[in-house]
Image (cartoon, rainbow, N blue to C red; front, side):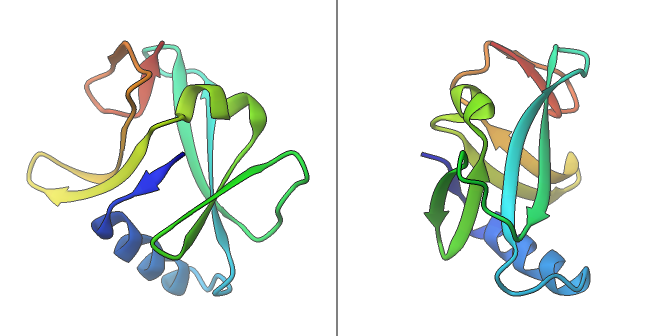
Length: 108
């Protein structure tokens, strides 16, 4: 399961509106190779649900994850920070053995 915090939910709703996305646009979370720790998170809007996607719903937001990425993301919480120490979406991933300083890449 993948969860989102209330702050992340509010930011997703605001971004969806600001970017002119339809109200049914889902959030796609995936993992790609790269970054200083080896794996990077990717977050985007996607109105299409692929038959191979795993779909989670939390706080009224549908979260789409492809099968490959699911192995790395189970148990992850998506948060949003707008504080002085960093601004943006943050992934709290219990599967990550280390993360980089920017929080955008990780290793398992």
